[in-house]
Length: 124
Length: 80
Picture 1 (tube, one colour):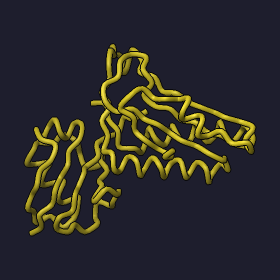
Picture 2 (cartoon, chains in turn purple, cyan; picture 1 turned 180 degrees about the vertical axis):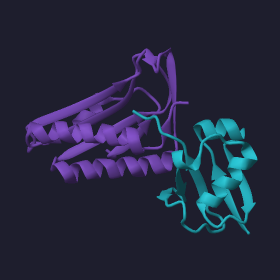
Picture 3 (cartoon, rainbow over the protein chains, first blue to last red; picture 1 turned 180 degrees about the horizontal axis):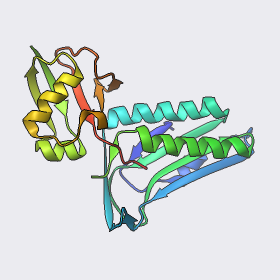
């Protein structure tokens, strides 16, 4: 499984998680970003995500690699939706498996924070 | 003069009215190129709010442009 990938269909978190299972790992942390009903004081009913795919995939892979190196976790991955999403749908998933829980949480947080800042994805 | 391809996303695509254009330009750097298209399309975002990618990699605004470069000006992102 690629470290960072886009999906045009609902994110298969079971599959994402399965790729991170590792007998050396005692901890697994995950984050899900959901489409919520308000943003900047305005009601939201749907979002449409678009991406500059070639660069987004590269930058996403770099972020996941940074997290693995910086926090010393075993495996990590991120899947981001593109296309139209309704309320409550999952926009992004991050999973991290590590020997112990502290670094799993830290790496998971790092990945979602960096993805939100750096990866060329928009919902205009 | 160089011929480059620009690809537009999000607010820049809305303001340009197109997702891609091919341009022959005397701009030597992405900064100069943005100034040219900013005026041409009436882009409201200042350069300071953007990043730039050339041939699918982030670049400095002052890096030299070459003919056939593919340039993308990247508006503030909203992933996650």
